[in-house]
Image (cartoon, rainbow, N blue to C red; front, top):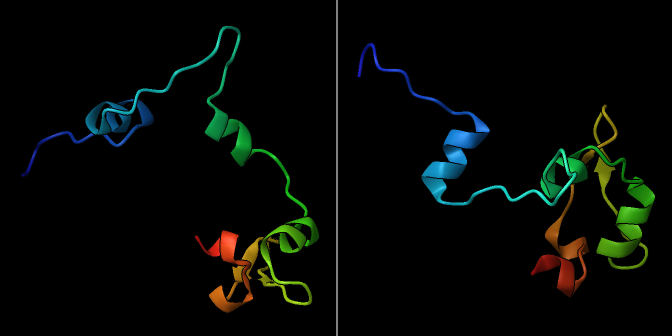
Length: 78
C-alpha cells in the first residue's frame, strides 16, 4: 500500500492487540517500562536461572548473549 501511514507506536500497537496499558494513580510508566530501566546483575541472574556451576556469556554491552537451554533450571526453561 503506497502512500498509507502505518503507525507502530505503543498506543496503536496496544489498541490493535487489545492490551491497554493500565497505570496506577501517580504512575508515569508501565511496569514493563520500569523493568526495562532496572540494572540486573548478570551474576545474580545466573544464580537464579542457571543450574549451579553453569552460566552464560555476556555481549559487549554486558547483556546475556549465549545462553543454552541445557544450562537453565527446569523452572527457567518453562
